[in-house]
Amino acid sequence: MMQMKPRTTAAASPPSAVGALTAAGVEKRYSSARGAVQALLETDLMVQPGRFVTIVGPSGCGKSTLLMILAGLLSPTSGEVRYNGVPIAGPHEDIGVVFQSPALLPWLSVLRNTMLPGRVGRHVSRADRRGHEARARELLSLVGLAGFEDRYPSELSGGMQQRNAIARALLLDPPVLLMDEPFGALDALTRERMNQWLADIWQAQQKAVALVTHSIDEAVYLADEIVVMSPRPGTVVERVQVDLPRPRKPDLMKTQEFAQLSGYIRQLLDSSETDSGGVSA
Amino acid sequence: MVSLGASRRALIGSTGARLHLGRQGASALIFVVSLALFVTAWWAVVTVADVKSYILPSPGEVWQALWPGLTENPTSRASLLYQFAITFKAAMIGLVVGAAAGILVGMVAGQFRWFERIFMPYVFAIQSTPKIAIAPLIMIWFGFGITSESILAGILAFFPLVVNTFAGMNMVDREQLRLFTALRASKRDIMVRLRLMTALPLILAGLEIAVVQALLGAVVAEFIAGQNGIGTQIVLFQSVSNTAGVFAAIIVLAVAGIALHGIVKFARTKLIFWQSRGIEA
Image 1 (tube, helix red, strand yellow):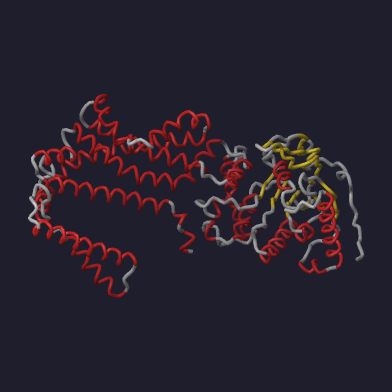
Image 2 (image 1 turned 60 degrees about the vertical axis):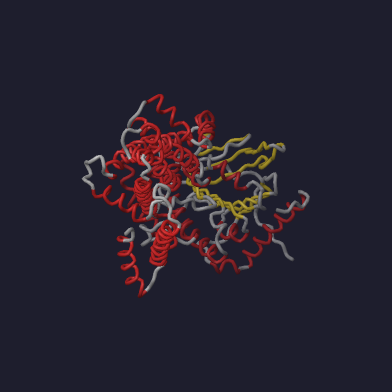
C-alpha cells in the first residue's frame, strides 16, 4: 500500500505565545499503594488561537490526563503549563472545558445550566451577569437547542445534553476550549453529526481548541494538527499537520487524502503499540 | 363504627373505579377491604373468646373512647386533641431545631474533612445506639415538661438528618465537581449550589424519618415524666386499666404520624421534580 508521509514537525510549532496555551515538559506520576504509576512522560504541546488540535492515542495513554493538566485541573509532577506566556497553576478564566460526560445539573433548566459559568464564577461581575441570559439563548440556538431553554437535562437525548454542555463552555466566550472525548458516549451516527456540527461551530468561532479522542476519523476530520500519543506511559509520538480544505463536509471522509491520513495515523498508533511490547487496552 | 369515613371513601372509590380502576384506586380499595376484615376479625375474637376488655377491648369500646376524646371541647384536658396538641408542639419544636442542626452539621462535615474526622465517628456510634435510652438522662438534666420533651424529640430528629445530609453531600458527581472547579466556583457555591442540591433528595428522605422520630421522642419523654400530652394520657389510661383509652390515644398518634410522613413525602416529590421528570417526558 502506498504511504504518503504528510508534513510533520518533531518539535513544537514556532513559538508565538500570544493567546497560546502551552505545555512544556509536562510529566505526571501517580503514587498508589502498589507503587508509582507513570501516566504521562515528558510531553510538549501547544494550542494556538484559531487552531484545532486533536489528541489521539490508545485507551489509558494519558491523553485525558494531559488535557486536565492543560485545563489546570490536575497539577503536573514536573514541567509547566503557560497561557499567554505566563505560567498557570489552576483553572483559568480564558479556558473553557467540556468533559466526557455533560455534567449538567439535573435541577437546573437547560437555560440555567448554560448560564452556570456566570453564576458561580468568582471573576464574573454583576454587570456581566445581565448580558448572560441573552448570550445563553443565542448560544442555545447556535447549538440547535432553541425551544428547549425551559426543559430539564433529563428530557434531552445524550447528544443534546453534550451540546448543552458545549454551549455552557462557550458562555463566557473563552479564547481556549478544551474537550475531553466529548462525544465518546454517543452512538456512531450521532457522533458523526456532532463532529460536523462542531466543525461548523469552530469555523464560526475560531478558538484555540484541543480535543481528545480515540477515534481516528474524528481526529482527522476536525484537526489542523493531530497529536499522536503512545500507550502508557504516554508521550507524543508525532505531530501531524492536516491541510485538508475547510470548511469540511462529510464527503471529505470519502476522499483519498482523508483515507491516507487516517491510514498513516493508524499505522503510527499500531507501531507505537508494538514498540512498547504490545500492551493492549 | 370505625368505617364511617372509610365506607364513604369506598363508595367514592367504587364509583370512580367502575370506569377505570387506577393503581391508586385499587390499592385504596384493598386497604378499605382489609381494614374492614381486620376490624371484623378483631370484633369476632373478642366476642367469641370473651376476652376481658382490660386485656383487649372490642372495636366498639375503642370507638367509644376515641369519639368523645375527639369531639370534646379542644380546650378541655379530657380532649385527646388537646393532649395531642401538647405532644405535637414539643415534637415540632424538636423537629425544627433538631433537623436544622442536623442539616447544618451534615453540611459542615460534608465540606470539611477535619470536621468529619473529629465528629462523624461519634455520630455514627450514637446512630447505632438506641437513643431513646438516654431519655432518663434528659429528665435529670432538664427536668419535667416541654423542654425535655423537645430536647428528646430534637435529638431523635437530629441523627437521621446528619447522616443523610453528610451522605448526600458526598454523593456529588465527580465530573460536576470538576466542572465547578474549572469554573473557579467559590467554596460556598460548591457547598450550596452543588453539594447541598445533590443531597436534597436524601435530606428530605431523612426528614421523613425524623418527623416520626420526633413524635416518638415527645411521647417517650411524656411516658417518663410528662405532666400533660398524649404520652402522659396513655400512662394514665394504663394505670386505671382503661385499655380502650390506650388504644384511642394510639390511633390518634398513628393517624398523626401517617399524616406527617405523608406531608413530607408529598413535599419531597414536589421539590425533587428532577428525579421523576424523565419518566413523564
